[in-house]
Image 1 (cartoon, helix red, strand yellow):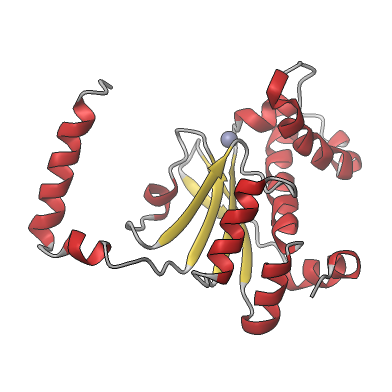
Image 2 (image 1 turned 30 degrees about the vertical axis):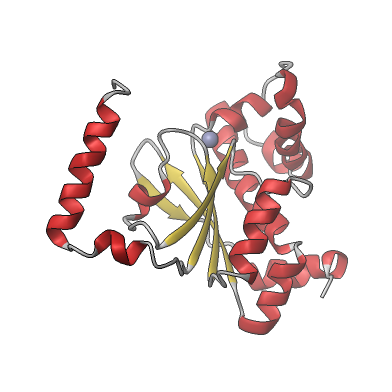
Length: 208
Ligand SMILES: [Zn+2]
């Protein structure tokens, strides 16, 4: 991939879009009203729009290493706040993926420098689910399960925020946990029981 080709690709993309709809960019510039907030990993193999088959304007996207929703991370907290209170999205998706380098790094005893506090959030997920994870002998299976449990815990972090709790009370906003399997290309719904988790954690985290 030559970086110089990107501007040529862009010209071709504009022409393709205008061939289908001459007002495509005019309409796109009028504003956005996406129904979904997608929180995913920065991994170059896991593109948000392409794997869901959606177009520009349909999904509000936040990506970081290992699709984390760290409680003190101003970036993800701002994205959630804006998506829920201004864009009024109907769904929030946390999408992890198998073979995630961030999750793998958190399972290893290495000093990752500035990444240490970020990866520690994943180690905290391991600690919460240590009994289940230590019971899995196969390293790859353990790694895949940690990816799933990390998605679940990040969904819980989404639910801890005041704006999501308010949006749930007012208009029943939904939170979904998904995993993208790079090996097969499949998107898997972890079918997280959102109302049950909500009821359970609200005893501690309810703000509204
Ligand atoms: Zn990843």
